[in-house]
Image (cartoon, rainbow, N blue to C red; front, side, top):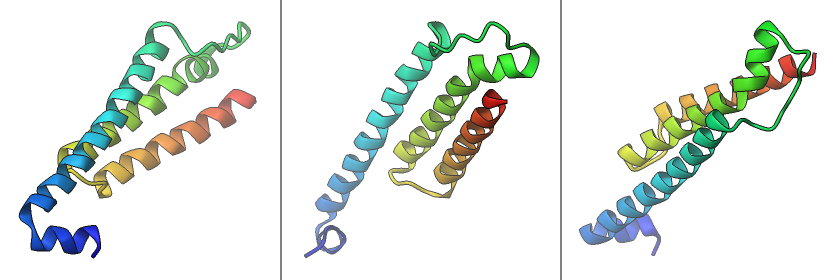
Length: 107
């Protein structure tokens, strides 16, 4: 019997499954938030003194932005007790921001 079948037969199993997902996404959100705060306060360890303008902003705050967006995606999933379209969309935006950031950093 799969977890879904068990949840259909036993409402307590459904509540347990929802709690498990909420806890896991909550742990992921707390972890990414901790790293986001670390990057925002201490920095990401990348020092490029010749970077100016937009390139400087991307190098300085790019990882913080990506991790902040991932934190939001995990929070949405924790609140809704499942990974859904909204959390997926925020995660995709985070991935795109990371890709753009790396492309901008290398040039």
